[in-house]
Amino acid sequence: MKRRDFLKSAGLLAAGTALSGEVSSARAVLDITGQAENDLNDINLPIRALKADVDKAVSVIIIGAGGRGNTYAKYAEKFPESMKIVGVSDILDHRLKSLSDKHGVAPEMRFGHFREVFASGKKLADAVVISTPDDRHFEPCMKALELGYDVLLEKPCAQTEKECRAILAQAKKYNRIVAVCHVLRYSPYFIAMREVLRSGAIGELVSIQHMEPIQYAHMAHSYVRGNWRSSKETTPIILAKSCHDLDMLRWLIDRPCKSIVADGSLHLFKAENAPEGAPLKCTDGCPHEATCPYSAIDIYVRKKAHLHVFDLDGSQDPEQIMARLKDPSYDNYARCVYHCDNDQPDHYVTEMVFEGGKTAAFSMEAFTPTGGRRTRIMGTTGYIEGDGTKFTVTDFRTRRQQVWNKKISDIPEYRGSGHGGGDLALARDFVEAVAHQDPSRLSSTIDASIESHVMGFAAERSRKSGRKEKVKV
Ligand SMILES: NC(=O)c1ccc[n+]([C@@H]2O[C@H](COP(=O)([O-])OP(=O)(O)OC[C@H]3O[C@@H](n4cnc5c(N)ncnc54)[C@H](O)[C@@H]3O)[C@@H](O)[C@H]2O)c1
Image (tube, rainbow, N blue to C red; front, side, top):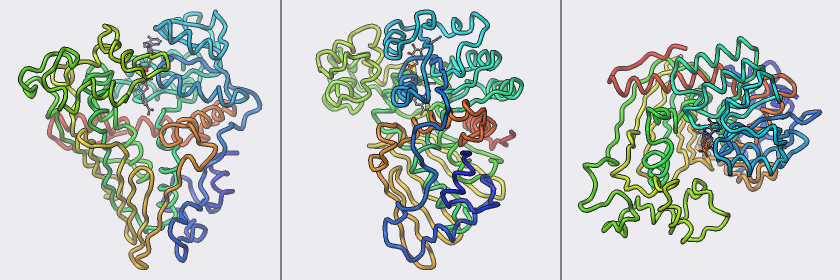
């Protein structure tokens, strides 16, 4: 069943309503007036079982068997009749072996560098998942498309706008499907918010305020010490971290972005702010360790956060974690946050104007106690406010408030699916799109994904130049 047909059958899309059009005419169906609190949980959503509607399993090669590669491979574990992992590529032997063994991958389909996957010049599976680091997306994606693979591509698509546009052109040239992993689009929370919006429950959308709180320890882990600390080696943080948010704003507003202006900087994590006597590593007897919120010992050994990067043997033994922090393969995570080779801003604000004069203000903030995106949507007759798990809809005329706060754990199909349920739902839609050769089964076309990347590159140009940038797609 196509997504559009599904929406229709779920009663959230009236016949004749364009999926990407203006406010849908589903208000009568949703009928939010006269219902009790929390009953937004009962609205029909285009949420369905995670098992894909396919006749035979789609065969996939995972390129990059790290965190994300394993996330998508989980879909094949749960639904082997929908997806089969037939090949794995990773430059780290233990990751290659671990994922390959789990899926019984034949020896000749175990590859090191991604170039080995394409060396024969033949197509060896239906699709590839590209979950390598940001600077290794463009080359394998272009090659995979040329050889006729459909591609599940981790975000950000590529490191430059030019490369992003080249991927779009290559997908069209070879008529292939590229699904970009904007997983939030597939999470029930954001799907519910969008459906309420499209029902007309707050009238016409006028503006959005959206905030992405990164959380102080997550910032230190990923964007100061870790893989995304350098905007040049990966991508500017507005893409590396926030391309989900730009995509989400474009998706909710459902109009093209016309201009963007951005500001922000790296305020804290630099050498000039190091407290007196702080050594280069937290593990070198730092006199501030007991009070510093960014202490590696506190984040990893005591709080046991972000441990997936340490390839632990399944235990969370403090001694083993401490040993990893002193191991040269992992000791970049022991570095003092004031003595890293980082350049990503720790606060970043953007203002966007969309077609029709609709506006969005977006802030990405490092200095917050928790994560969880916050969104406020202002409409002509009502207002939506959400905290990433729960949102409230206020109707100006009736002054009634209604709440959507359905827990992912209450939706059996979505249990164990990260990003608010989005990870495995994306995998399902991708598998169906490939099996039926029908990209409309995806929430996002490659054109829309590249459009929100173009917004990110424009934001970064604006942040650096101080000028408002036009967004030209
Ligand atoms: N969609 C999301 O919400 C989301 C979340 C986190 C990360 N990401 C993105 O996913 C990608 C992967 O992130 P991750 O956290 O899984 O990283 P990771 O470091 O855990 O995994 C990347 C893997 O790629 C392997 N690799 C590196 N070079 C390779 C090569 N030449 N050939 C084959 N394998 C190679 C590495 O050894 C590693 O195992 C990144 O681009 C990241 O930005 C997306």
